[in-house]
Length: 246
Image 1 (cartoon, one colour):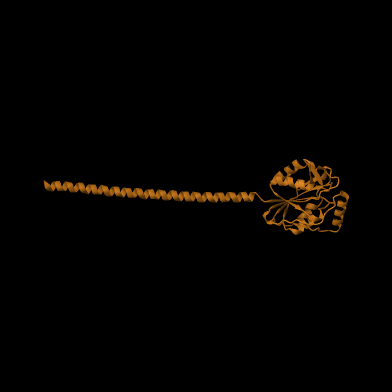
Image 2 (cartoon, helix red, strand yellow):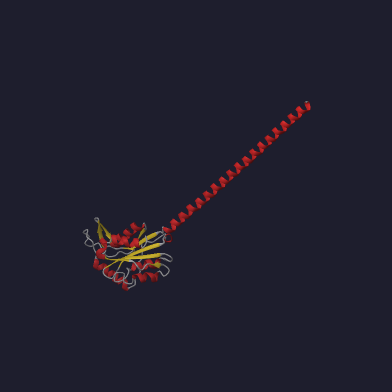
């Protein structure tokens, strides 16, 4: 009887120990599974974060490429005779404010594109009255003069697109534009001309720009307007800029 009782007790103890070991094994298995799940989740989050960072970087780069830096250059020397708040051959009056014709056009292009503005200025002064001004322009053209510039672009490398504006003087660009084109290398950049004229439109000035900047992309579909119509140019000028994709 005692032997039987001892056998039953021993059997019960063995069963209890086996169950305990199984529980420990199950707990270890669950812990391992939990660790694996946590590791996988962490790796997934890290991978997702890396992907998002890469994606954000790509978006920034693409945006930077799409938004090319624009510089709007212009030469303007508005006549000062008869300055009675009336428009003239080289100036306009907008909302009571007198501006050079090319200055006004450059500001419209800048406002439309978000580009920076640069005025091409010379060391020498030009006459403020019409006849002496056109006479001096004729003399400079005959002499192939290169008037010295007093303003200079200091950070040309940051710009991809260069608008260049000028009046048509004697069927040509003003001589300071030649100085300007000889001073800078616009290789790899896009040049977009705009001008005002007294009847000659661009003449051959776009071809001249292309000859001075052979490694630039010179747009031949420039914007030209009669000097008498500059005061009403805004809508047409904005449409032209938009059609260029800016």
